[in-house]
Image 1 (cartoon, rainbow, N blue to C red):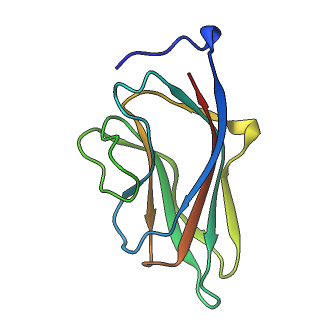
Image 2: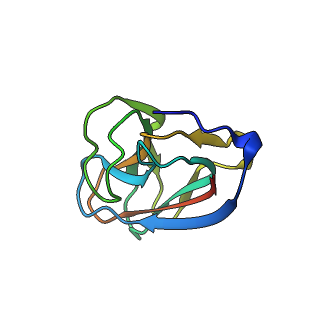
Image 3: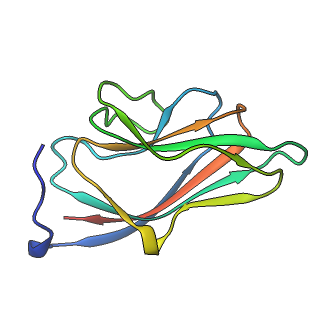
Length: 131
């Protein structure tokens, strides 16, 4: 697992992706493969509660190793919570990360999410893929 030199950048690509987990166990929101040769600068993560009646808990973590496909359970490694079991009110959103608290996702790491109720939190993540 190398740490790419971002001073020798050949490209910066802006991306946004999203996921609404169908279960209540941790799943990968954004993976960075172990040999990708890239680093990802996470600019924003938003957890939006789509339940019109009930608050729903959310956990968002930086996961060492376990960089598997989006929506899959992480494999190996350790979860390091960014936010842990935070209640998101009905029809509201939680800004987990924004540009003032940006983080880097290194090779072999992933961002994982856990929802307290299945199919009730939609996560969106905006990031820059740096190579």
